[in-house]
Image (cartoon, rainbow, N blue to C red; front, side, top):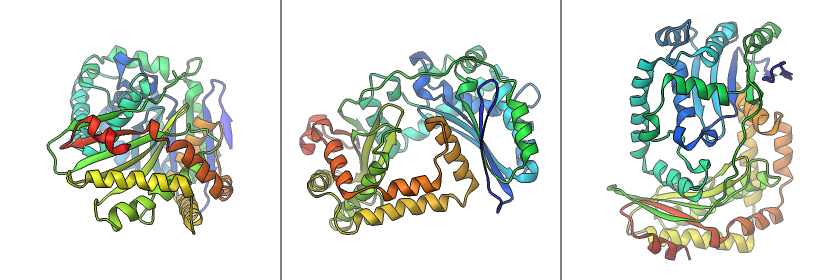
Length: 413
């Protein structure tokens, strides 16, 4: 069921009678892509600051109240959205959502709290810098979309963080946290009085219009990031598909066959048959207007040349033959199982509800997802592989004891 308030806030619901909990998420169509360059990182910073107190509640009060409910409260920021969510017993929905709504609508953004949290986020940036896997994937994305806001880091930089003030945060929320971009998703055990209460909390939210995005264009890049670590971390990228693409289910199956699990081609070839790495996998990142299909692995400097050659060989072979044997059915069943097992968790259901409404204007049900996977053919997978694995558009980021960009560009060709 969907309720649209007079101000444009949407409330999407999914009752689950067999549970005693409910998951509620406040989804906002605002992420790092919407930020001006000078305010890079402000969406993520606001996500942190919303937990630091309101006019009625101090940060300690919020923390104690959340723990007293025995529930889970958290938040995350992506390139295109931010979500604040909770999971509580059905007897605590009104109390929990009153806290979450107060944080969302009435945060103080106290100057002292901003200064303290600035240090926390800088530590978070350092934490990611100490994770070579994250550095490799983030730097690849940053370079391939360098000419647009999509390429900027979600966390921001030390320079941009230093400019954030109480006024900056309030002004940004007023301009980019709009009712028409806000979705409240609830899944689990709840009743009509809970929905009525949620409506009453968000009816006062004000603001006009909707956020818009500047289109991003993928450009192939080869970049290196020297780092004193034991392994070299390699991330290879190709242009992907937008989140709304008709071929998105074909892409998911393609990604699963190539590098989605232990039976995938890359895992079997590079790890099992040649022993060149511990981890290797493929993944997709899809956004409103573009996307990227990537492959990640980590290995020793003396084996990277052979491994990259094998990765390219696997991709060329797949483009020549497409799925063989039971590959298509096996990966299709794997994806369907993930969907159906996710239905056993109210948090997963809530995320599917909120994301579906935010990106597609409706929740995409399990039956539709299963039917979409079942409709994918081997010919469709082959055609998409030949379209996406275009080696004139291949990119690579290497982190570790690296060679020159020209060296890696040569290996890819």
